[in-house]
Image 1 (tube, one colour):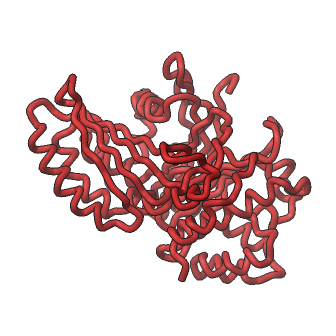
Image 2 (spheres, rainbow, N blue to C red):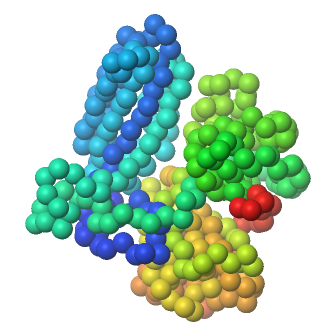
Image 3 (cartoon, one colour):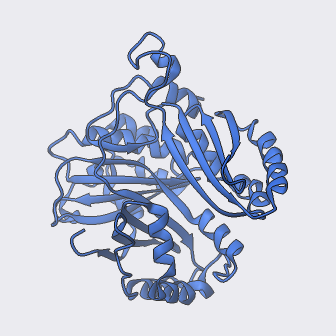
Length: 383
């Protein structure tokens, strides 16, 4: 079986499509930067926790190296950098339950952390198109984004309470979109699939600042408290550790975004849920990303924009569609226009969805299974 790292290595010389503004699948090396603010007097405790964590991380597939630095101006400020063969193995690790448990000792001695992830585009040692460029695994070209950061959260509610939760989430008052002079909340879209909730946000500026801003708003806080009794995973938002663990597990990062054309205010937004077989989530997300990239060049495709979110075996595709969904080709909406890719996808979906996908005569059935229930879609004025 081909590993994620091998597939990434094989694709590292591909030229990035101009339609793709964000992707973790180009095979280039990843640099992760973690800024840490350590509690006063806890420097030695932090160092010991890091050394224990460092020994564990060294054995994670795809990890290359890491480095710990302490500020020469403020001993409470630390910097951890790590290098990975590519983004997929890092994301598989950082989004795992193993990681949640592994970093617990660190959070006992820190006030705040901030994680930044970067593909390596250039480095000292030669041009990107030189004979050793592929071996150095540099990103082939810079991505030209649209200035929007996309992120999502997902969690499950106790079965039987779906309608109650949907009503609470649909009726909340939108928070103030302006965070500061450089950050603005642009759009929030909520969908449900069975008892799973997905909340996707679009932000211009600083994502972390926007998420913290939203969490502090009274109207949002009231909604979060209202749905607490219905959550499958208990949480106490008044307990920083409980809230941190919940939102860490709920994080559903965007791994690919493609745009086929200009913004169209008439486009309909939909969400599709692709339940993956155990340990197949990243492969499924990459397959859908390749399909979306190819479809972006097809003028017949009704999909104007697509964002793929993935964590573990949860894969969600948020699509903006030209015209009504009911009038479109179900296979094209699903990203299954290539028969060979469709056959591969059936091996990655769980049993129920895979059986529907393998029935060539009924792509509409798979769309029905994948389609998430619309809850609400809020755009900020002038977003």
